[in-house]
Length: 253
Image (tube, rainbow, N blue to C red; front, side, top):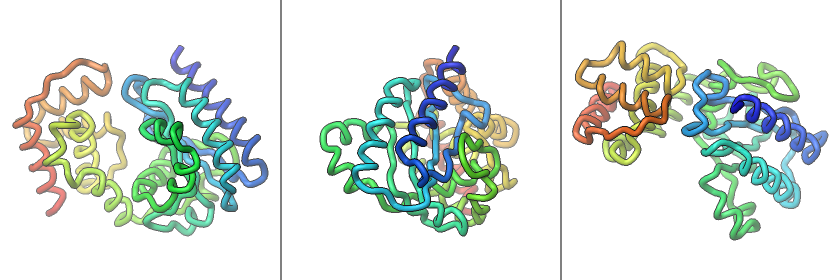
């Protein structure tokens, strides 16, 4: 049932994107857990990149965001995360990558309270886009428009590594606040550093259980249970800190 609801939502999102952006729309591309086989409606968002040819006006941004907010209300718990980017920054790849507009559920209140301010301020560059583009190239899905290989260049490994490192560099201080997220993210970053693997959170956890010291397996297993099963988990904060410090040391070597 969840899969059918998600497919229906995505199809509706693509249709409305075509209606609003018209000939300026290059394509709509799906990445993240939905293409990596580990979507959990309690823990995962719907990750989309929208590529356009030319910059869009504030009125088009407002119409598009109003549409995104409508579909976000129908989405699973974590909602929709999307960025609009120009085709010109995708191939050749530009890093840090400029974006025209971004939305995730965490910004819903800001947009609701002051949409003009949101539209004015929500642009710039985003290092995370290097990671998103890498997933699109390796495992993504073109939902509409120009094929992936014609839109996205390969992301240089140094840019991808910088992007995913940026996401975990403060893990030693932050892991007790976000234990599941950082435990699994640290694992997949280390898997890329050591073996060049581009993994989901779940795949990162599987890799870590096989490759990292036995001391950390209970923590990794707990994070996997919370992520995959939405289990209630009480984490060992001291173990989590040791794990984060260990992985950070390995990444810095």
